Image 1 (cartoon, rainbow, N blue to C red):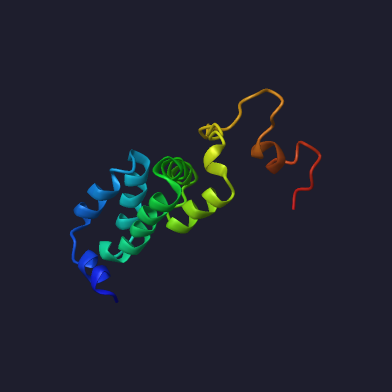
Image 2 (image 1 turned 45 degrees about the horizontal axis):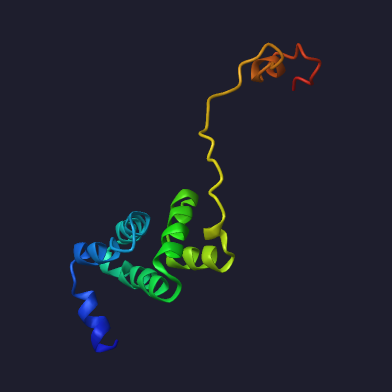
Length: 125
């Protein structure tokens, strides 16, 4: 490991997330997700540094938009952010996410009990 990389591994996770938060709120949130999903936060440092590298190379606005989309999709990795940028999905508006609702209640919907009783002409085994 290069000297600069070993110095970063010794950082506390808060220092890295503070640094990444300068890119944007969604990027900081994604970095926090990456770090919290590892057994040891230092295991996620490389992915977080990948986000910083992408921001330097492609611009903070694109990385922030890609991180927002990655969070919406539940894709918590630097590789997912890079794919979103490669496919230029960061430039497209986010699709509306429809919250899951309960079962549909309507008189034309028979439900499982209709089929279990054999009334509906189905085969009862």
